[in-house]
Amino acid sequence: MKAITQDTYGQADVLQFKDIDMPVAGPDEVLIRIRAAAIDAGTWHLMTGEPYLLRLGFGLKRPKVPVRGREMAGTIEAAGANVTDFKPGDDVVGTATNGTFAEYVTATTARLAPKPASLSFEQAAAIPISGITAVQAVRDTAKIQAGQKVLVIGAAGGVGTYIVQLAKAFGAEVTGVCSTAKTELVQSIGADHVIDYTSQQIPAGRYDVVFDIAGNRKLTEVRRALTPKGMLVLVGGENGGIWLGGMERVLGATLLSPFVSHRLRNVLAIERRKDLEFLIGMIEDGKVKPVIGRTCGLAEVPGTIKDLQAGSARGKTVVII
Ligand SMILES: NC(=O)c1ccc[n+]([C@@H]2O[C@H](COP(=O)([O-])OP(=O)(O)OC[C@H]3O[C@@H](n4cnc5c(N)ncnc54)[C@H](OP(=O)(O)O)[C@@H]3O)[C@@H](O)[C@H]2O)c1
Image (cartoon, rainbow, N blue to C red; front, side, top):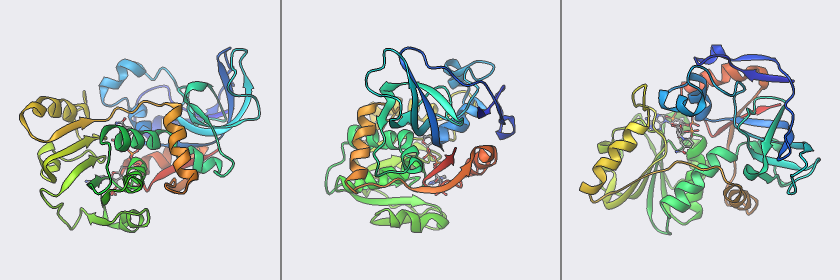
């Protein structure tokens, strides 16, 4: 089968589009024919192996799993003997740790949900990682209440477009922060106010909750936007050092937390079927929609990742397979 693989950590030119052996499902797994996958920021952290901290889990010298990609939608081709919740022919959406920039993948079923007929494979593939992260940030960490003033920094990206819509659906007054070319997009998904960070300042002392997804500002800078008892929710972190990356800000927030009135929280998303189903329900109810900014074919993944690393993301980027 065709897949995007890598033998070593590095920039997008380490990715190869090539033929590899078909995976075989174990007794607790299903084999899925992938129809669409999506690229998220985690894709290039795994590709580069940076920050180095992640190599402890994903492979010290090279990635243990050579095929990139973690989220997808497709159709079950075969099911292992112990699988009872899905059967061949079922359309599913979810995450798979064996690499989803490929024609087939094997997966355990705990992180899969049925794909509703009302969603295309492309729309469904755009849900799992960014959508689950947003659900856990908005509903579980911030516990957003109607009437709260919420700021979303990084509002136009994969996670941000879901956080804006979920916070609106929970009744908040939402301000999205993005670059000039993406202000219309952020408005179109329901933000009450948009701040173009290239020409406007974020007002001080105004927001009950700040979600920092872009993750490239200092803690003092993002905390300035909060009301005295406001909550900062750290979702992304892109500016740390080579060893710890975004974890540096998380550690800084943990050390600072006892000494400030702000509540400082971090999100480490856990891929769970029930959260995937929760978001799919909201999409079916018309309260949230997956935003797909760009699509590409499997062979175009390396070039597309280069563009995304440069900050071009508008919602999700979907690979049609
Ligand atoms: N905590 C978790 O469990 C978890 C889960 C998933 C992802 N993440 C992290 O969340 C972050 C975002 O992921 P993603 O998939 O949403 O990435 P993405 O789709 O590439 O979007 C990132 C967005 O950040 C924006 N941005 C860049 N600089 C900015 C700035 N100075 N101010 C405001 N916005 C800025 C970019 O748009 P502009 O053009 O508007 O700048 C871009 O749209 C990454 O660091 C990722 O690793 C964390």
